[in-house]
Image 1 (cartoon, rainbow, N blue to C red):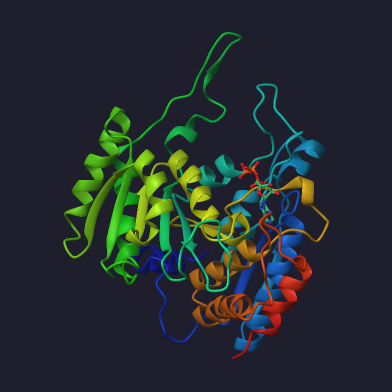
Image 2 (image 1 turned 180 degrees about the vertical axis):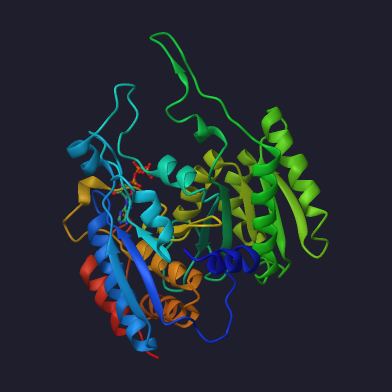
Length: 377
Ligand code: ATP
């Protein structure tokens, strides 16, 4: 990824601009992954290619392998040199990875890429927009427009830094959580930059960053909050808000319109974004971006759903919207907006309907076609 892209993202924090798209070539690397990954990535690429063609943008596609199937074959979840290749791409579109039966001797899943990519590429900010679109049936009562917030999940430390490093014997196991001043400072600043370019919370239009933690119980979270407050002082035009994580789980269900941007530690972000997904039509509705200085990759927030893989049952919207985030990150605002508008239209006119199971009523391919048909300049 070019440093220009990274700097723009970090300062504009994915903000939409009306400036002309530039440049007209995007070098995209696709990593299809496991389970439903390949069908989702295929769907998203179809949509992205159509949108880019309309806007006169050339999408140059490279492919990279990675995940649990590769681990089974080779004993490694990535091929040699993969991180360098991914770093060189303008953007990376990644499908979910992991297969429940592929395990390490310690019982954890093998072939997951979260640690390898997030730490390896230092993509420290995990941007997870949670938005209820008109026409989407949600599990909770909410009007379209009343749920529109972004979770900024710290991606490189927190509890998950302990993956593969905790202590374990027959009787006991321990994993430790690391919170650093530097890591918290950069993620808090990213969150405030993000809020600067948004229009505020649905309830009151106030630009607000909410720090989610358990600083009432753990010292690590107390440091997280302390550093958050220091960064907040640099942004007097944005409201700094605090909530404990357990209260946040409740509030995200009963008063989601209060939230604009939420920033939190890695493990909390993983859990609360799945909760948020439940309020906007399910996991298959939610895209994400993993953003660093030298690299960025975009993927659905969910896993590989192996039980429905290859059966035309998966909802590809999470992957399609991840593709739109990627294009926006690469400066292709016009192509990105074409895609998000087409998705919104397809839900609003009833051509896409998501079942309570999370799958689309007419299948993965029909969703792809419905979105492509609605890509109009
Ligand atoms: P991970 O921990 O990697 O996020 P997981 O084991 O929690 O994965 P998922 O694969 O995310 O589980 O799936 C959770 C549930 O959501 C499953 O019932 C799955 O079938 C469903 N699901 C996930 N993604 C989709 C999708 N895109 N379309 C339809 N159903 C989905």
